Image 1: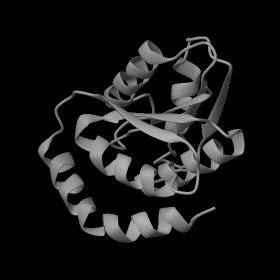
Image 2 (image 1 turned 180 degrees about the horizontal axis):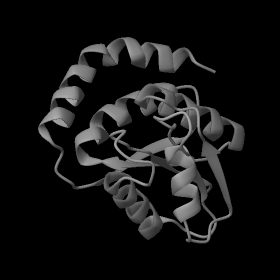
Image 3 (image 1 turned 120 degrees about the vertical axis):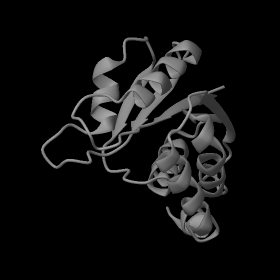
Image 4 (image 1 turned 120 degrees about the horizontal axis):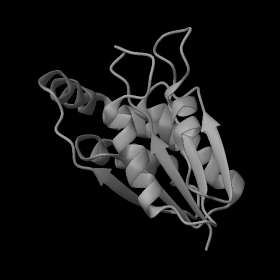
Length: 158
């Protein structure tokens, strides 16, 4: 069985290094990764001159895997989902393991599931249990208002 482990980036825009939330996601993914897995680091750079979240995660990764990909262009959860689905279809994987935060997992899972609708891959969402701040909770709540539209877009993306 072939498996893609996709780690979603995170940044609050306040620094140029790997954010603690992103580090926790990376650590969780490393704990479940197997040597025959393919890993996808997904996330963009909030600041034009800094490295992307995906690049920062890839540099910090030390767990042996079959292959690793870096998606620097995913600037949103919907973008993450589309990138994950494209790679899953290209690699013809049987399973996608999406690694993110608990507060983000349900929305990310809905969008990834929509994007994977035309693939044979089964989706599993693995989460890290950290507490979001008030602004993160408010943003997450607001994002849910457009999930139905984004799910349709993700499902139609190739």
